[in-house]
Image (cartoon, rainbow, N blue to C red; front, side, top):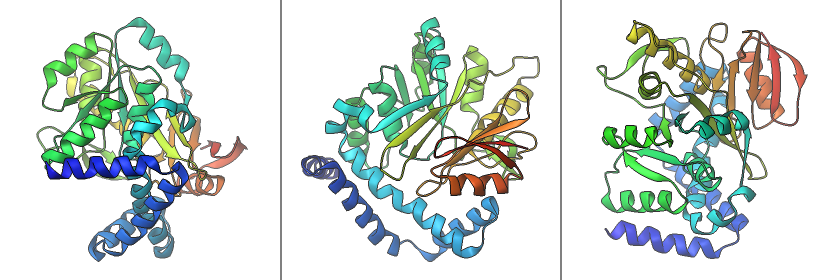
Length: 330
């Protein structure tokens, strides 16, 4: 448990710093840590970015580095939960299908949040909880008992209820009571538990939790994304709900829903399912086809990133919204 007390002490010290100073410290520590990342992992990251965004090696290296460096500020924000929780709306703005989400919650039947390891996913849960949404965070037990105790204590501190992924019965009980179940979808399941879908144009074994639960309980699945603006403020996007079909072909229903959920989180086949890429740092892109299968909405940190995403998706920009929003026609 030494690690628990060490991180708790560090948290107290970081909470004494002004927010900007803590973020600058996080950025500096991340730059130092990047030096020690093994070359093999850097090469793998570069190759994946090139495959996804069709960039050259230099640009891919820049994006991979930016994606890694954001962990510095992310860690500092988690350490500052004790002070941030009182003014969470100063740090995070929730946008998108909020009215639709509120209407679902008013029915009292529960819902599912499907997200990924993009942005500060820990802060995302805290932002929803502090905004009054009854959120159950489904967690995996950490290998370090001290760190497991710390992170779950801080998740609870900002209002989340935490259950382990093995606690299926508790998960379903709370869903029936009207809670939202938060699931991180970009995980690597076993061949027995996953389902093969298209991801980045390749066959990929995908996590089916959101689709399976959504179908079984007939509750809506809301894809949610978090990204950090250049000024340090976070935007939390709630997308329109996905409802899993419930036909006689259970496997086909789950595959179809999983494909649609994943297409909101990763780069899929834009002409069929939508387009998205969640590479944080200087780039966050998320998109999905609208109901008419004609337009695609792209959210990005800045116009440059959005235009690059549009190019990768073979789209033509026809309207620009406020910074970070692009609506494009395929």
